[in-house]
Image (cartoon, rainbow, N blue to C red; front, side, top):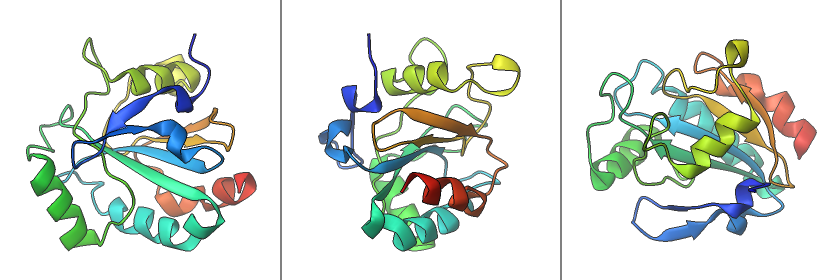
Length: 160
C-alpha cells in the first residue's frame, strides 16, 4: 500500500516522467489548475508563495485538469505558455490529468483518500483544490478552491 506522495510519479508539462521522490524533504503544495477558470488568477499568488518560500523548501506542483466546465482545453504547450506569459509561473507544471472518475491519476486517488473534502467526500469539487504535503511526503490538509493561496501561508510556514 502506498504510504506517501513519494511513491508516485507524473509527467511534467514537457512530457518527461518525474518521480515525486525528487521533492523529498520539501513541503509540497499540489493544485489542480485550469486556464479559463474564475480561480485562474490564483496562479499569481501561488507563484508569489513559491518565490517567497522556495529557498526554504516549498515546492508547488500544478496539475492542469479539464474536468470542470471544460476550462483547460489546451495542450501542454499552450498551457505552459499561458501560465508563463500571464502569471510568470515558474513552479513545476505537469501534463493535463483527470482528478475524478475511473481515469483519475493515481496520485489524485491517493490525495483524495488521505485528505477527504467536506462531509467526508473524496471527490474533487472544482479547479484549484489544494493539498498540502509535509516534508515526510504525507498529506496534511486539503483546501477548497475558494481558499486563496495567501491564506495557506501560515500552514506552509508551520511545515517549513
